[in-house]
Every structure is written in structure tokens, then in C-alpha cells.
Length: 460
Image (cartoon, rainbow, N blue to C red; front, side, top):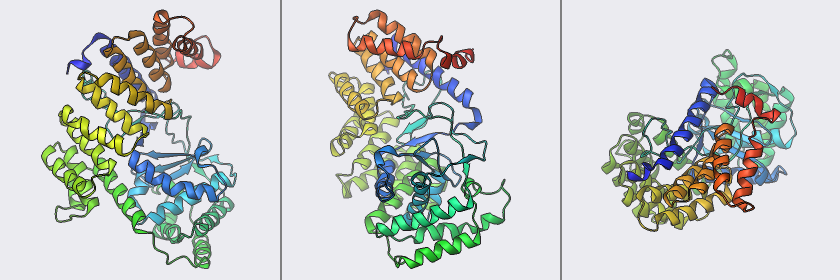
């Protein structure tokens, strides 16, 4: 595709991929990726925000992050940030179990618990790599066409650690979780079930325990107390509503489809299962297996039943895009944005597809979508990278260089940010907002600053 072959675009891609590669090398085996997906984030937020509110917290001040890790874990780190492993979401048997864990972790924030380091595991000391729509990061020469290297980060992440809490804090968090759910009129049964399902973890060595139970040690008396408190609410038999159960089933199906081998997906969701979650998982698995016709058939059957579901249109766009049918993918991504406006990840994916198509007017539309996304997530590195390509294709080289500097800055590569900001400022009109922003990046990433010396010293 010619869109990726202009000299400026190739320089942007080369520097960006080098920055990402160096990030992986620095983080090494300690790095874990963070998943970005509008549907899953929306579902978890819908469940989490009411719990935060009854705990006296402002949902806007609490981050919620999904870690792509098959182990069972959830934890609070780096201030008011809840992190949930995909392994926990997939292992959960009911939405109440996930809500119970979220309630428990919420108390660790709301109750002001201090945490101590007990594990050497870290997510990353610099901005974590994030995949949009569960996309796969591809770092390879000439991978511009697949430029779907979907690595966005809407937040700057400091080093994170897993934590061990005192028995008193754990008991308080259990009690608080039961209280939060009861206040919402929801059953605390899920928290009790979660603990009881994994009580055997207490007899295993630390090396064999799931991370969650190394950080949150169970005890029989603690489980008994939690059950007693839950039963006293009189809500143990309250079932989650159909909408919540459906959201849970669809979230699990989507994660399983993307994160497990297609053969495993088809075993769990055989073609004899015609439920919506099963067809959703199979659509993703067929896409992963490059069976485009089957993937389209599955997702089309879902769209026929729910024509106004933005996530189904998003997935169809992804299937078409990944199979090289770029022009066909545009209407699907456009429809997802129309059905669910002001969602940064949907806007970015739409813009990326428009840029890849490159018809008359596409770059202007892509720029509008990217700027809309950046209003909501100004630190989204992938959006900045896409904007750099769009600017270059419109002949706005200085703005492309500045967007590249922004992208490099938000993935933590100060050297590249400094270099591109300098080039941009040389060609921008003095005193303009863009000129001032380039100057700001130059100042922040100045290698002479004491706080930047370690970064520059560690570069080859």
C-alpha cells in the first residue's frame, strides 16, 4: 500500500518501532501488556463505578486497567488504580464474582490501606504497551501495512508492584465489599463463591499459588466470616439481571476468542452452540485463523439480530481490515462511531482505516476523528502516531514531526521526542500554539535535566 511508503511516513514508522522495541528490551520479561477494548472497558466501568460511588470515591479519579495475563489476579497499585488480569475475568463463573473482587479492591483505596512490596513482579517502569481492540503488536521491518500495531496508552504508568496486605486489612476489605454490594441491592454471593472456589490455594506453596492469593492470603476463618456477613444481608439469593449476565458472557467470549488458540475456542464454543457469545467468540477465532468468510458469516448473523450494536460493527471492520479489504472495512468502522460517538478507541480505529484507504477526503476525516479521540485521551500514543501519518499525507511535515514527538513522548522515548520536536519547531511559525508545544516538549525532554539523565545515559 503506497500510503505507508512516503519517506516521512517510513521515518515515522521506523523511529516509532525502534522506540517500542527499545521499550520491550528495557522492560524485558517484566513487561506485561495492557488491553484496550471499548466494549470490555465499558462493561467493567458500568459495574465498577457504582461500587466506587457507594465507597465515597469519585469514579473519574479511579483508573481501571485490564492486564493481558492468564494468571488469576487483581490488585490496586500506583495510587487509585485497579488492575484486573484477563485470567481472572475468564476464570470467573458469574459477574457477581468479578464485582465481589472489585468491591474488595475498592476498599483498599477507600479505606486508605498502605501497601508493602512483596513481589518483584512489575508491569513496567515506563508507559505500558496497550492494544486497541485486542489487536496484536507487530514489530517487524516493513510491517507498515499491518500498521495495526495497536499500541496506545492513555495514561503514564509508573512501576507497579503486587502487594501483600495485613490480615486486618483483608478482613476489612471483605466486609466493605459485602457492604458496598448490599447497599446497591446486589448479592455478595460472588465474593464468597470466589473465595470458596479457591480455598485450596491456601495449602499450596507461594510458587504454585495464583498471584491473587499470594497477595491476598486466604484463611478458613476469613471465608467463614465473609459468608456470615453476606448471609446477614439477606441478598445471597438475588440473581444478577439478564443484561449483566449477557455482558459478562459476551466479555468472556471476546477475551477467549482473542487470547486463546482457535482450536481451544472451537472446543469451548462448538458450531452446535448458536448463542450470541458462542458466535462472537467464533467470529474472533475465525479472524485469528485467517478464515475471513467464516468470520464474516458469524459476525453478520449477530449484526442481523442487533443492527445497532457498535461492537459488532467494530469487529466486522477489524475482520475486513485484517484480511486486506480496507475499502470494505471503512463503512463498518464508520457505523460503529455513528452508533457510539465520542469513544476514542472507535474513533482511532476508524481513522486508521480511512488513512489506509486514502481516498479523496479520507485524510481530513481521519484527522477529525483523531483529534476527537485526543480530546478525550490526550496521552494516547497510537493516536498521535496515526495523526503524524495523516499530517504527512497532507504535506504538513512540521505538524507530522510534532505529532511524532508527542507519540514518542507518551511512550517514554524522550530522545526521539526531543529530536522530532526540534525539527518541528524549526519549521513552525514562532509564537503559534504548535510552536509553543514543540518548545514545551523540548524543555521537558532536555537531556541536561537531572531527572532525564538516567534515561539518556542508558541509550546505546
